[in-house]
Amino acid sequence: MISATIFKSLNIKNYRLFFFGQIISVMGTWLQMTALPWLVYSLTKSAVLLGLVAFLSQIFILIISPFAGSFADKYDRKKLLFITQSALMIQAGLLSYLTLTNHIALWHILVISTFLGIVNAFDMTIRQSFIIDLVPKENLMNAIGLNSLIFNMGRLVGPAIAAVIIAKFGEGYCFLFNAISYIAVFIALAHIIPIKHLIEKQVETFKEKFFASWNFIKNDNKISAMLILLAINGIVTVFPMVLMPVFVKEVYAMDANGLGLFMSSIGCGALFATITVAGKQSTENIGSWICYSSAVLGAVVILFASIANVYTSCFFLAIAGYCMVVGMSLTNTYMQIHAPAKYRGTIIGFFITAFLGFTPIGSLFGGNLAYAFGPQITTALGGILTLAATLWLRNKLKS
Image (cartoon, rainbow, N blue to C red):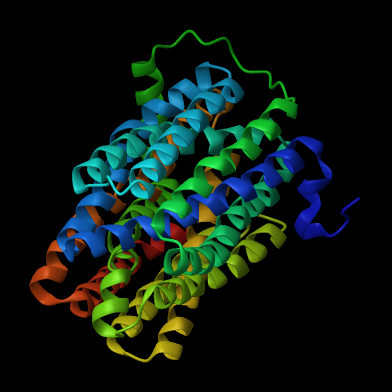
């Protein structure tokens, strides 16, 4: 048995199955997330189109996630995950086929990215609200921290592996591995027996649940401040992410290995952040943690944009990765603990909207700004906005 506090949720069979199934799948996801922008930029040499692809793959999260949360509250989350994960497997398989047969065109990528965005809006919300079905409530903070660990282990290792695969075999094999990786999720889900929670009979319509959840968030000053800050950071901190191929090729004159190095640096910092959150024993001072991590995030994004040295940039990106994950994970934890059980899925839908729903706006905005002013000025402006937002919301966060 695993006795260390940081991994205590892995002592629970349901969560252990979920954890190891997701590790394999998320690794494949990061291979695709690294290879797809590289493929787009190789085909088009356009920062604007990089932003457009990122926009299409995430804009539906902004629109759909709260409604997807209502589905998560009303229907069997395990069955819903089988459906969404199957759809994700299909899009990865199609992308792989088109790339490996040299039939891939920009319009294929735009259509597949749109489909991916719609499915992810449901899948991410359902997966986040599914965690409460896997562990007792007292394990929730630890389980959410470990869930972030899954994502960030993929962020750390995936881009480095993707860089090697792209250099030796091409982007298509990254997409192929992603498609195959979903098999691990299906095996895990088949063996999970969710915890049955006592939840009031669902008599409200989707519209009523939506507005009840919205009013809960609006009337809680700390949660609303957390979500506003998460949304603003989602818009501006995506600049260095979506523009990374431009930084690699134009600023640092590096190849795909440079992309893997920079993306893995973010993952390294994020990995340490998940360990921090998973080891945290209480929700005390969560608002202060979120406030300070956001301030440091804005500062290091500005420094990354200002200093064109590979090793220094990797260091700043690692700190940025740490701060992003601390803010996201603690906001998620606080909301799941304080959300009424019958609205939890819908409320988590609002969290997903704030966390990822505004990033496509940042992607599109960042791509066009980079076209006009270059990637470095664009990224620095994002960091300044993050600092301003943190200063504006600091009193509500610390209340």
